[in-house]
Image 1 (tube, rainbow, N blue to C red):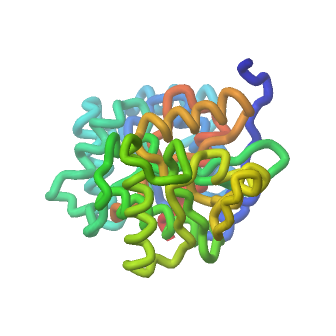
Image 2 (cartoon, helix red, strand yellow):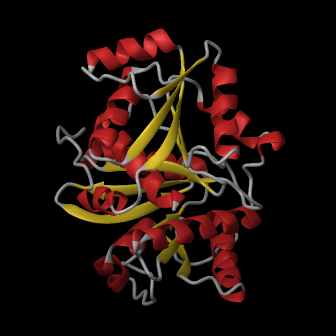
Length: 303
């Protein structure tokens, strides 16, 4: 059942990123081949100007494997992962970088540094993760949020996740995104709490005048398939045409993303948004296309 199809780099995403200025980024614990490989690819197409943080000798070793001369780049030698994460956060605080990229360290170490009050990277919003998903021969993205950061968010947190997603999709070029608040049904029922929450989120989106079409609850099929929505007589601005899938919990979003990757060969570009600078937190299993796409997405989010 697993696909043998290799994912495809989303050309429109790369094209959008190329229109931005070359972006200064910090790669934290850059002593990792995959991190250096995606950094080189991003540098080769003029997307980034990197600062490498981590074990200097190992960073040079990984660069040599790629035949990449990094002698002219800034390299901050640091053996400790926690200290490396702090350095990345401090660079962002001082406006020396616009993006932070995770290298060879645990995500929780990186994010703990990001959240420290002394670095002042929180700007009154809630951090959330968003995936920009594309499939082969089709550059039209669908966005999944939040499947990586907020585990079981309350309604107020989901509203922040929604706002972050709408802001990012507008930067991608979607003027008024269509948001499906997912559940297992299109009707609010007490036995399915996510459906009740979805209806409340839809009502709050109208009340707060969020500049997006928001509808919920919607089951996945009704959110993405016009035919399924038609059969069930669901007719609104979102059904069958969703740009953003606002999931009820992390497990749902994570599973949905991974199924798209492993069953149909989707390219998943994932970033953390809502703070002063976006953060790329690539999974160890992500391939080069996904990592490069994530960097491109972060550059767009940083503008």
